[in-house]
Length: 283
Image (tube, rainbow, N blue to C red):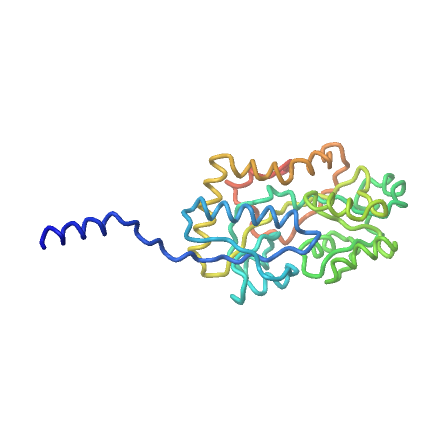
């Protein structure tokens, strides 16, 4: 009997230990046009959490949502656990940022979506003063809206994302500044009526960060560790190139007239050790 007991104990020791219950992390599902950028963020989220050890598993929210709603639900702990949007002082006050520029600052490089009939007109423009009398389209809850206004630009803001494209097609607005990572999908979807303005780009220092709820330091630490592992082993750069490489080359940023804007919303700047990640920085 004693021998049988020892054999059973040994067998139990050889059985795999049950792993801790998986904790699901909900990420907001993208609206149609923003899908490329948020798809990239979701892939990074999945891989960063997996490289951390597998305690967390990423999943998408049931319904798509605007970024303002996603940030509010995250803050209230109501069905969103992590987001990936442009940083601002206000957002970092409300939420806990993972201060790694997952987009390498690309969200601060803006090309102009315009009506095709305005191509020759915009080709003559070369500085901010040329654009200031015109009206730009932006979302109500985007930091870009305030950045443009604080730099003296006229902005029509709305919560109707699809409506901005419709107004541009009807020439009720003059241009729609969009990130390099977004604009080509949107231009192609609205071709031939809308095109990317030739030769111009806006640029302001900023970055897209992952945000988690204040106090959720364990998830923040897991994401930071996972992202740092991806940066170290080269998989971060591989994902960035896969999603954004073609768009960056298509933009030909170095051949454009760059209109530099000040970003007064940037909180304390991007951490010094992370600035080397930024693309084409002029600082």
